[in-house]
Length: 77
Image (tube, rainbow, N blue to C red; front, side, top):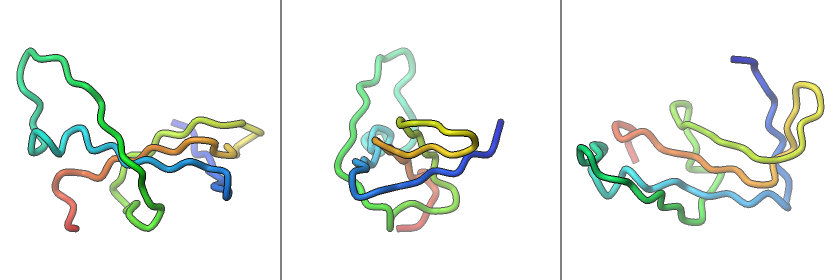
């Protein structure tokens, strides 16, 4: 997909998606999963983190209002 610059400001709300941590990285087969998020920190986002951003897009830049990141199950903490 396209490469976008994500701009984080003092007004950006940051969440850590901990949904898969309750399943040790493996969701139960055939069950519905409720997403779980908790307040997060930009310092915890790593190279392999998955980031979802909501905000205002201008060209190739998104000014983040909400940023949610997921830490891969195999990442060291």
